[in-house]
Length: 264
Image (cartoon, rainbow, N blue to C red):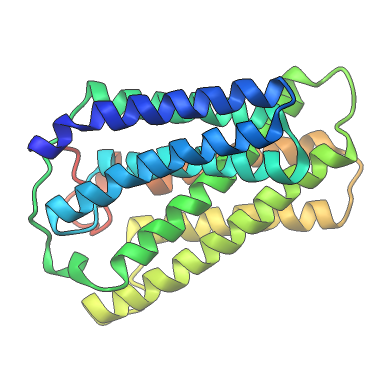
């Protein structure tokens, strides 16, 4: 599709803006860092809107299309954390991760068809996917925090500020997971007549939702072993990957799950 050939120009411009944002954050120029990061988000979102218009459907049908949304929301989460807590390295790392996902899409272009199965034409489809991608980005940022605190900051205990950032990312991410499940239930009722059918992805989503609830309860009880809480986040993120793309490789989902993404 011709519109996909333009992706590289939008992607490179957005990555440059995000990189400048990360650079200026380390230079102490917060206003410039925020401005350039927002500019990158606007450029990248503009391409998604153009693609949406060209396809005449939400660009959420294939794995590559969902990577576009993840690449958008990762720097957004880094920007929010930086704006709120002045945490520079998460803004930088979210830029690196977004660049990785953009690069995957550039190296593995897809055939973007206008065709959508009737169930995906529901008005609940787009909100459901967008809500989940926001949740994935928030919880992905929490995972990055957990890895950093466990392996790169292990010489000293995490500060209250670092715990506040991690916990808030999980709290808001879990809230979006909840909204995603509720919107998915409404979509399922409209499309298939049932709110819940124990589809493989629904089962993994419920397991992931409960797993993050374990972390929340553990943190609220203020247990002494905080390293355990960080390991819980890492395990939970692995469960989250099953919800997003791992479901495509489950034998139980082949030919039965309506949630398997088109891989090309």
